[in-house]
Image 1 (tube, rainbow, N blue to C red):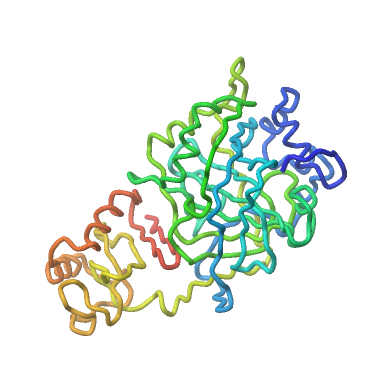
Image 2 (image 1 turned 120 degrees about the vertical axis):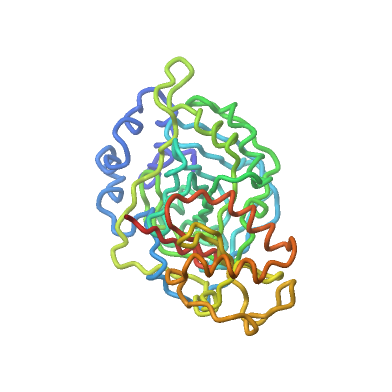
Length: 393
């Protein structure tokens, strides 16, 4: 969001300038709760009622059948990754003739990609700014673009109606990382200190996205100063993956310069903000996603859920009528309870034995996901709805 002029409404460009100079350790030391006090033109950070990030409660999502798939151009972009001392930011090169457009979804206009913010924690239990049923991912990647039909640039659009789009990618720990994400993670060692900058070449935003058309959307704000309430948020319904080694390199980044590194750059997420009666819409039809049929294995053509049963065994949701590789359909199987909370542990063992029929793709997926999702205690996730549940003792 860097800009040539410093004018009213251009505080974020000023913030970026300040964040890489020694005199503004103030943002790093005071924290997000003081942003509205540091600069009067950032008052929305303290007083706004459409602020981000938020906690998404799946039970309160509103299904909107008119929401279209989100489209991101295939063009590759080049730019630079910056350690600002408060954030890790990728900014596309201004002089590049390549423009990546973001359209569809809840958007009424064409938006032009501008920058990426990376938020993460110093441990695996928190890091993402947005949460799903109060569950935080280790990291969150946010793609920002500006309304290129109504405004000339990010600096103008960021404080105007429908000025910004922000696409949120949740990042989960896994053994098979996103290949496009590796283009960014490979230069982490070159931006270890505040003020460090490293070139990033030929990044495909489309390839960075997870393979899903499902998302949640709401009207919110930027999660950095000055918290302008002009962003349409799109939170995709599947995470992308990062390895433990890449996450370790990310957590080695520091807030200060090489001479005085100060504290780690991590834990740079803004606290959750109140929803204030806003509506969170989704294109996920829960009537189709949630069916009463559960099994250990999914259909060969699709899978929509993954999680833990009360006896800590993983399960998959099957389609209602499509046969699995073994040839059985849900109508031929013995009835299973509609809610897995009521399933006895022995029933899961019986289901596993009854439907085991060789190393299908679903079984391989099951084993891979079992290693990836490191939940503690009794919990489960629906990929179809990002629904999570944790049972407390």
